[in-house]
Structure formats: structure tokens, C-alpha cells
Image 1 (tube, rainbow over the protein chains, first blue to last red):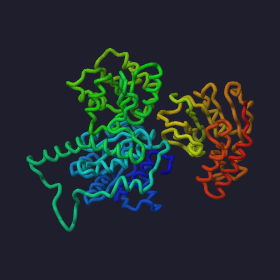
Image 2: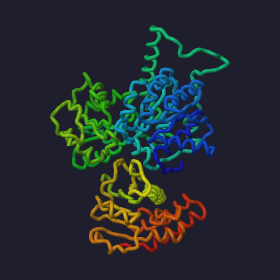
Image 3: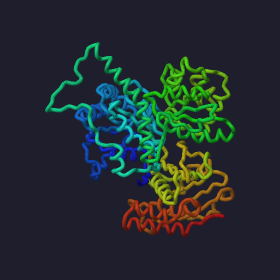
Image 4: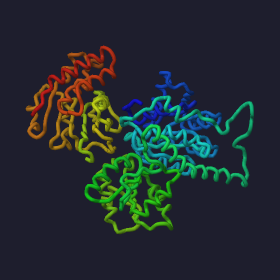
Length: 388
Length: 191
């Protein structure tokens, strides 16, 4: 193992290449650009020997990945923001066709107003496409999750695409150290992809043909069953990774000081890491608070959330907003608790448009939530009137 | 701050002066000195050549949880003295903070040396002396790094020099190593 200090994007490029995908198809967009540039460098220096396809749009990037995956190739791509939105139709296609494509999405704001910084509205808008969704909080976690994701996506009980999300600039362009296993260690953990079906010119069959009402629901049900299986398999893969490499970033959730917690903060991504600093400070003040960093949004960790609600009041920070409703994470958490728990849940909207969310702001949010008498304070816009 | 040994550094420079490279080299050197928590990042956004820019570094012996910007640095490094007319480089600097300036002047020449620990090094002359230039313009980011171990015990000169040699092979590396040595030897530290 060697330690590489580099940006989230370059570390993602390293992971992608070490997973040995036969095909990478991508189109550059800020702030994902240096990731695909990194892979292009590995093509230039001979380290990546697969097929690297430069396409003319993100829609084409996903279409090329779909075609490649259908022929039984391990396939990787990356995008961000408007690029992800342009892919939307193809994202559905990939998951309905049960293709284990792995993609990094660098969470970036949607315009207008034009903004290249981070929030999660791009990937939240893809919530219902059937993709498994991870949210990372460090460069090491990005590396580890990319390798793990191929194993999860290709697992015989899953066979669904996986999206690995991480914050624009805060992670994509920040250098941090990451332990990089040897190629042999990665190969041992992640053997070559054995496709469950593939297009084969010698044995022609038809896929994606018209399908009647009697069968279509089976396809959807099959995807749902796969996501349900993923809840266990994500845990198993995280454990296997820990056994082999000694690192565990959590499975569906990373727990931090939750055991005796009367209050639990739920956050994700870079805010999830920053939250640990806030928890440390609040604990010093004698507040029994813990952190549940949501690492996986699809499949949604309902059971885990219910368990947390049994012991603690919940505080949720969403770096996204489902306009006309609430933060996406808040809504899913409330939905999971319906009829099971009436614990207090306070929701904050913070950090949209890349606005910095430092630990002292997180501490302020937590204290405000603890003080609040309202049982369902669904949407406090932090930094606006009434939100400090 | 949530961890006591964390050191937060802001590097001020002009676009094209290699402030981000300096931050990256610094944390790479810090890794060699046994620090595990490391971050180097630019100001997030578009940069223009010549305009004032900032780069940031965090160094700790332990994993760093913070992902936010640096608001109250322990150390400020100024690569271009003229920036001090445009930017309040002391903004947020901790009361016991240190500031390292590329200048011909001495620490005592800066009025704020009464409040802060000031260190000065003539990195521009060192860069010119060792012909570390791009298009005739001196590149001060590596020379100034040589002065850092005098104000930050977490990073040693040999680690900085090893990092420089990894980044630039051959003569370019040797010139940069000599420059860091001279900066280390000539930096004036106000005590």
C-alpha cells in the first residue's frame, strides 16, 4: 500500500482505472473535468489499457456505457450537475436494463443562476431512476467506495448501476491523503466482471422489446428486490473491505458517538465530515449528541433510521431542497418514521449553492433544534430570518 | 477548532504564482514527517493570472474532519508583498499567529510585528539567483517553503527538499532544493 496525496477527482481516476473497466465513456464538465483528464493521463502513460471513448455529450456517454455494459464489459463514467440531468433518460435505461455501470457524480449546483459549487440537487433529482446512491465525505472514502461499488453493482442479487456522489471542489479539488492498495490486492478483492447476460453476435436474442402489462411490473419489482438485497450486500462488502484493508467508512450509515446520544444529527457528504468536529465541540459542552452520516440514499436505510429514532431526537441537515416540499433526506426520514415513532425531527436547509457550512454553524443548528419545542420543524433555512 | 494539534495555513499569492502547488508540496512534506491529517485546496472558483488568490493547507497528526474554508489561520504566508495593499492578509489570523512574508524588509519594518510573529525572507531574489523562473518571472513558491520549518515544527526542511526532488527531477529539482536551503538559512524570524 502506498499513500497518494491528491484531489478527490484524481484519486477517483486512480480507483476507476484500478478496477479495470473495459470501457470508460465520458464527457467533461466542471468540476468533474479533472477526473476524466486523470483517466486520459492513464491512457497516455499506458496504465489504463481499456477502451476510452470521448463522446459528444453526457447523454451519449451513458448511451455508450449502456452499449458497452450490454456486451458484458465492466464500465465506468463520471459527470456532474447539468451533465447528470442530460443523462436522465439514459439513467433509467441503464437500471431497467439491469446494467451494473459505475458512475461518479460530482455534486454541483443546477443553474441558472450559474454556479459551479456544490449542492445535492443534481443527484437528488435522479432519486427515482433505480440507481444505488452513495455520498462520500473524504478522498479515501471515494477511492474505497468506487472499488466497492463495482462489487456491489455486479453482485448476482443486485445487478444495478451505482452512482458515487461527492461534493464539487470541497472534495473534487481538495488534496487529501488516501491509502492506495496494490493492483494485486484490488484484483483479489474485485475479480473480473462475469456478466449475467450479454449481447452476443453468435447467439442473437432480442432485448428491450415491447412488453405487455402482465410483465412490466415484474421488471420494476425485480429492481426493488435488488435494492432491498443491496442493504445487506453493501454491509457485507464494507465488512469484507475492512477485513482486507482495515478501513470502514460505515455501511448504509456511519455512526459517530451515537451509543448514548439523546440527540442525533443526520447529515451527508462533506457536511457529514464537518459534523464530526461540531459533535466533538457539543460533547465538550456536555450535550449528549451523536452523528449518523448517511452514506447511502438508495436503498434508503429505513430500519436504521427507525432504530435511531427510538433513542434520540433527530436533527437533519439537507444540502438540497425538493421545491414545494422539504429537504429530500428530511422527507425520507419522516416517511420512515410514520406510524413507528413520533420523536422530534428538526430539518435544516443549508449550504445550497456551495455556501460554506462550517462546524460552528452546525453547532448553532443543533442547539436551535434542541431548544425548539416544535415536534415537526420541517424546514429551517439556515442563514435566513429565523434560521440564525 | 476541534483538534488541538491542527495547524491551518493560508497562502496569499497572485494567480500563476503557484500558491496551490505550494500548499500541495507543503502537505506532501508534512506526510513524510509523520502527519496523517492533511489537506491542500484552492479558493474554489475561477482564477485569473495576476489577480490575488489564496490557497489553504491543514496539517495535523490525526485525521481531519473539517471540510470548510479556513477563517482563522495559525499561519499566513504572503508570496507577493504588493498584495498586502489589496488584501487584508491578517484577517482572522489567530492572536498568537505567525506570518511569513516574501520581502527584502525585516520583520520589524512591519508595524503589525508588535502583535504577530513575523518572519521575512527574500524569496524573489533567491528564485532569481537560482534561475527559478517561468518566462523570466521569478517563481517564489518553492523558495518560500524552505523558510516554513523555521515557523512550523510539524514540517522539516529535509522533507520539503525530498518532496521538491520528487516533483522536479534532475537540475530543476536541485535548483529548487538549493533555493529552499537558502531560504531556510536566511529567513529572519522575529522573536
